[in-house]
Length: 122
Image (cartoon, rainbow, N blue to C red; front, side, top):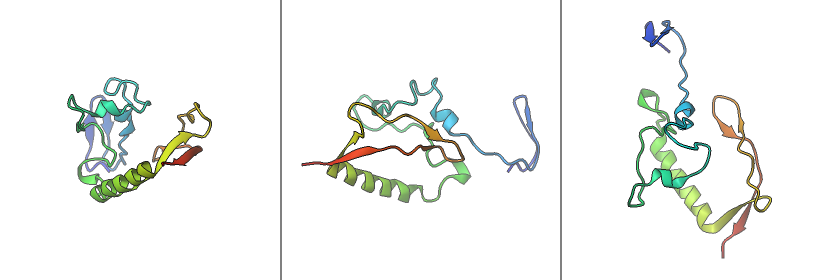
C-alpha cells in the first residue's frame, strides 16, 4: 500500500492505494529476454557454462516483501526436481507434440493442467 502520494512519470498514485507488482512483465519482456515463452536454459549460463545470476529474474519477489521461505523453497525444489529427473524421463503425452503454452489468469500465473508421460530411467 502506498504510504503517501507518489508521482511516477505521468501517473499520480494517491496515498492508501494498493500496489501489486507485475513481475511477469519483466520476465516476459522481449527486450530483456528474447523469445521469453521458450525454455532456453543457455540464456542463464555464462561463457564457461556455469549459472549466471540475473537480478531481473525475481521468482520470489524482491525487497521487504520478498518471500521469507525463499532459501527453504530453493533447497526443497532442488531436491525434489533433481530426484525426479534422476529417476524419470519426462515426455509429451503425444510423442512429438508439446502441450499448449497456456496459463490460468489470476494473482499467480500458473500453467493450465496438461498430461505428460514419466518413463522410468534404466
